[in-house]
Image (tube, rainbow, N blue to C red; front, top):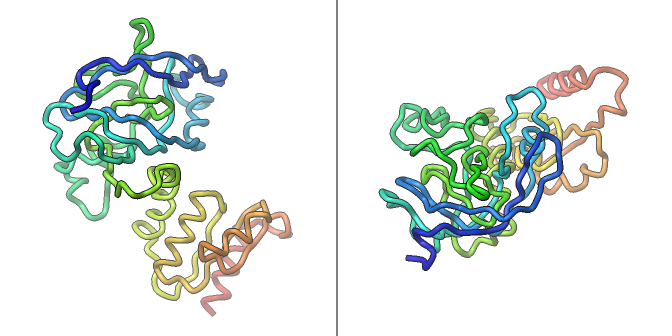
Amino acid sequence: MSSSAGLIIPCKAAVAWEAGKPLVMEQVEVAPPQALEVRIQIKYTSLCHTDLYFWEAKGQTPLFPRIFGHEASGIVESVGEGVNDFQVGDHVLPVFTGECGQCRHCKSEESNMCDLLRINTDRGFMLNDGKSRFSIDGQPIHHFLGTSTFSEYTVVHSGSLAKINPLAPLDKVCVLSCGISTGLGSTLNVAKPKQGSTVAIFGLGAVGLAAAEGARIAGASRIIGIDLNPKRFEEAKKFGVTEFVNPKDQDRPIQEVGISLLILHEN
């Protein structure tokens, strides 16, 4: 048991007080984990465009003040009652689409949209008691995606954590908790390309490159990378991309170009 178990931990966090306004480094208090919750020390966190989208709060219901962040790595500091899968010192990745392990989706091989822990961008509190684990001078600060990793410490549901090999470099594997798993999973678990097939990928950022890697693993013989930035093309070769298309170089809509390339391959 850690020396801070059961105690409130003061720490630094980047707090968004208003939509579109700069984040402010604040001293926050992080309450102990309750039943089925885990408090983790965030070691590394990266910035995902999803954080930016909800910080701008365009097209959604604004929920502020809030601590954003969901792509991170950390170490378990303490666990709440009923948590048996994690212990102090475990290296973990927070997962914004968790798994209770009991509902119909968790038991299905085709879906991971857990009835309890599926992504919910409007929820700013913990499921256990409907309260936030973050506060500043008694004022609750909303959670984000059940993760809130722009804080030195955070509290998550135990079903929203993945234990990893302690030898894995935390500064690199943090992107596995969102960008890489999203791209790789979209190819291997959703698209499921056949051996020797052709795959077209729109956008060669982190998610797109991970999707390309998934296509390579699946055995696709032709992986077409489509992006407006030609500087990305050389790097994409390392992830299995075999040819490249820049929409700026085309005289017709890129979707027509993509379809013609796929038809040409089939013929």
